[in-house]
Image (cartoon, rainbow over all chains, first blue to last red; front, side, top):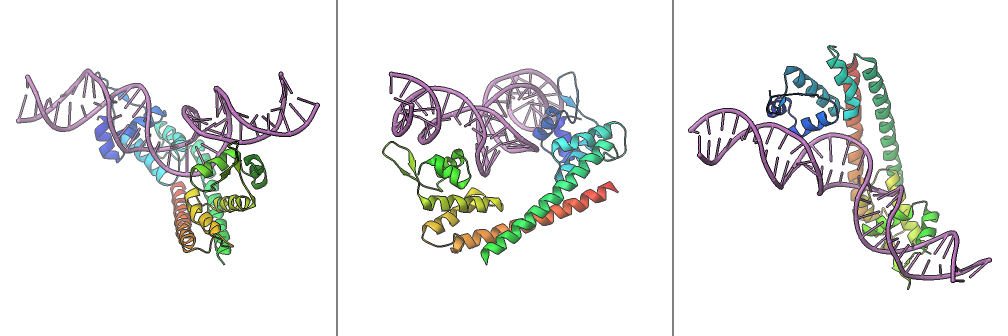
Length: 112
Length: 112
DNA sequence: CTTGACCTTGACGCTGATGTCAAGGTTTAA
DNA sequence: TTAAACCTTGACATCAGCGTCAAGGTCAAG
C-alpha cells in the first residue's frame, strides 16, 4: 500500500510517517515510480509507535521496540533494550509525579 | 544598578533579564549611555519570576504577579488575576499528575 | 592610549514532532 | 485529454526560554 493508505489505516499523518522514516524507524520499500510501498507489518509498527507515544515515549524511545518487532518478536517490549527503556521511563514518570506534587504543595503554601 | 549586577544578585543570566524585558515583564529605565538601570524593586520582581518558574509557571503566567507587585502590593499573589492563574495552574498540575499515573499504569500493564 | 570589563541590539541555534507550503511527477477515471 | 487525487523532496514555521555568537559602544584603571 502507499503512504496515504497507511496513514488512514494507522491514524497518523503522511508527514509523520515520512518523519519516522527520516529518523530511521519505519523503513520502506519503493515502487518503480519512487512511491513508498508498505505492507501489513508496517501498520503494526506504526501502531506500536503511536501506542508508545500515547503513554509518553519519544520516537527515540520507540526505536528498540520497533527493532524488537522487526526481529520477529510478538511484542516489541520483550527485548532487553525495550525493557530498559521502560524502566527508565517509569523512573522519569515517578520523578515527574513527585515534582508536580511538590510544586502543588508549594503553590498551596504560597497561597495561604 | 546595571544588568550584570542584577543578574548576579538575582541568580539569572543577563540574557534572561533581557528576555523578560522583551516579553514586557521587568521594564527598565535607561541611563544616558543607554545602559539599563535597575533598583531594588527589580531584584524583588526577578525573584518573584524565578520563584514562580521554579514551581512550573511560564513567563506568561508570571505576568499578573509582576503587575500585582508593581501595583504596590506586598505579595504578587493577592490580585484576582494572580489567584486565577494559580487556580488554573493547580488544575493543570492535577490533570498532568493523573495523566502520568495513568501512563504509568498503562506501561506496567503492557509489561506483564 | 590601551586594555579589559562592562554594556547594546540583532539574530541564529536548540529540542521534538509535526504542520504547511512549494514545485514538481504519477496515476486514474471520466 | 484533462482534472482530481495521489505521490516526491526540501525547507521553513511552531512552542519556550533561553545560550551563544557577532559587531560594536562605554568607561575606569594603568
